[in-house]
Image 1 (tube, one colour):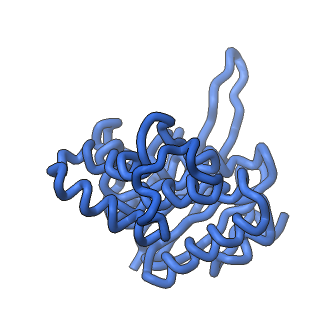
Image 2 (cartoon, rainbow, N blue to C red; image 1 turned 30 degrees about the horizontal axis):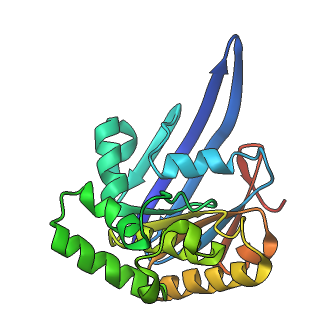
Length: 224
């Protein structure tokens, strides 16, 4: 089953009198339950592509189908609803709120969906237990290691029970040992039939995926 499909996606940015072509006709299909990596050097367009998949950025031209709906034609409020309910995102720099506990961090996406507080607590607790942080639910980011903060970020992505998880350089701020632990956790999630799209510039990290794609100068190529 095709979960998402990009058809001839073009993304241009207009700077004064200059047009910058960032994505140049991207075509991509991701099947439900796939684990793919998208590799590319800085400036290749991979962050722009991830933001389009996440519905945080719009396309210049092209079609984007998510669960068979052409979401490219939807407005920003509809995009926000899909992001909040169907797409989990794991950030390179964790994006945690300093004053909130791990439990509160993970509860937050559910608050935007008006989930009752008791259910938010239950689901967030289970998500943290899933990433081996059941004993750290009361701790704030400055009381957690980098690896633990990233696990909170993964739990926050999981708590909405997303159709897909997007991971943008999830090990970029970690040492190699901790990064491998995070990637093993992501691999375990895939084995539970989670669909995962991973952005990375590291071959060792991309090797965890089952399918590798290479982006250069806004286009998919055979290799980098």
